[in-house]
Length: 123
Image (tube, rainbow, N blue to C red; front, side, top):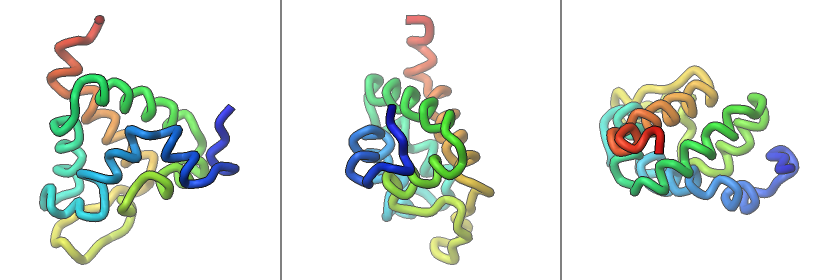
């Protein structure tokens, strides 16, 4: 059984490779390049990936959200290039989430409601 609190960043990135991929793109260090708002960056995530990646990301997010808040924090530090709970001055109007669980729930919602995922629901 994978235990995030006992894992290295490398092990976390290997276990949550899709989430790590998001941290390297629309939700990474240069997330401000993908939109003026954090919500826009989240919505960009599904549009830039294929269906297999979207399904795997949904699976990873469901596993992540089953963890407690400390474990979610540990995984988030391992896969993200940003802190979605920080009130950032730059870029303007970036926005923030009250906690990481809320952030990842929004990411899951974006992937689950992607038109390509919805079109294959039940497959």
